[in-house]
Image (cartoon, rainbow, N blue to C red; front, side):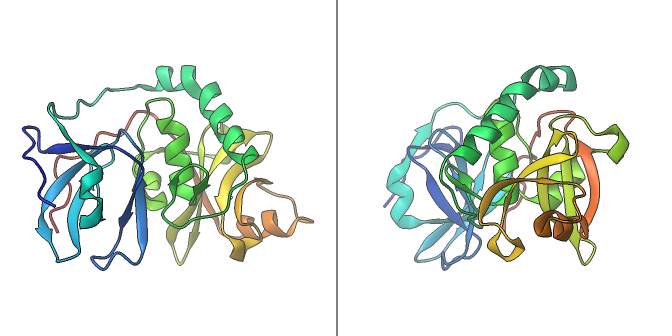
Amino acid sequence: MQLSPSPSGEYFCLQTLDLYDDAECQSLGTQAAAGRRVQMLNKETDQAVRVMTVEDGYCTWLKKADLRHLEVAEEPYEFVPVDRPEIEARMENILIFAHAAKRVSNTYLWGGTTAPNYDCSGFIQAAYASQGIWLPRNSYQQGDFVEPVSQEELELGDLIFFAKEQRIDHVALYLGEGYYIHSSGIEMGRNGIGIDRLWEPWDMISRAYHQTLCGFGRVMESYAPPSLACQI
């Protein structure tokens, strides 16, 4: 399918689209919900085109068969800054979103960023995005983006990071009183969104995550992605 030229270089997604880490479209990398924007990058194969999700600057592959689900965006994406006081004002609704997502039947989905099935960073990104606050896509990117805080300084909605081999590979949302909510894989004892504690030695899941706990961070602003963050 041949896309109509876009004066902004961007296209709206008309429905949730799966986006892939590989040009063969075998490994789900992320998802773009209806209403999100993608930008075409200068690379394609017989099966897929390279795209960037505009709001978070994340580059993946889109099946050419899904080009029909795109619509021209006449005007370019306009970043709306959100500072820390405004984030605090929206925090209650961020937490409401997270709890509501848990109540719906769900499973852990690598690459999932839309309801009902999320991966860990997709769940955190979706919770903040529900209130117009964008975060980077992956957990290690989110770890680089936030302002580090200590465990004693934790506030509602702060992010909790876990790492293996010195690289962040999991993220959770702090709920207060030592509890956090996250989307956790089956290999860690869950298969979807659950609530665990920072330290609860008699609970297998909390204990397993505690062993990989590596830090905490606070979202101070909405993420402004660099233009054309990747071209490869």
